Image 1 (cartoon, one colour):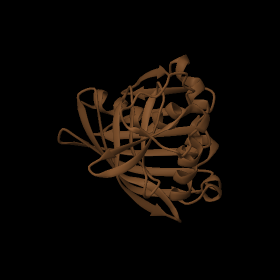
Image 2: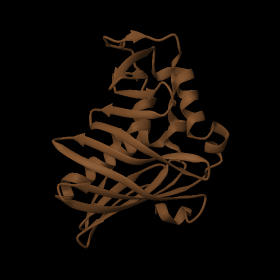
Image 3: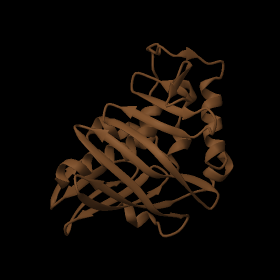
Length: 228
């Protein structure tokens, strides 16, 4: 179970901003109407809704603690980030899986089996930032579509790598879809004036995963030594 669930969770956790950086040459395919708002405005509104770009840029490190629930199992997860570096440790039933990226290269270690990250994933990981939302690139999207979900309007940014639904009223990201699966941000929590997803429901590869954030620590407890 652990070998299946944890890699999918990590894909959901680390792929969203990387997907958003991909420049698309494909036209957006949607039956929804096209909005007059621009991709840059959608992303700017998102950063504002999270707490403001300046406040987000002031965060130099994070520690995010999660509980991942799937098929009756619970996995405790702690992820440390500093710039484009991260260390994620998941533990279940006395076993651990670790993923580390030092800004240039990375690996996963599960039950003593160490595997380097694929070379084709490294360029995307290098572009990541401490706060994922800051990595969204407006030039990756050509237009904004307006779609309704459960009676609410969403500004939708699409590329050939993913589709992102931003609540038209709040500006917050509600849903993200990519090749790894779909993730819905069911609720947000506020820490030091910055919003973070509190409950994510993800589905992909035939799995349904609930990811609940229990604690967020900003600008404390992370050093370069964590990423060795």
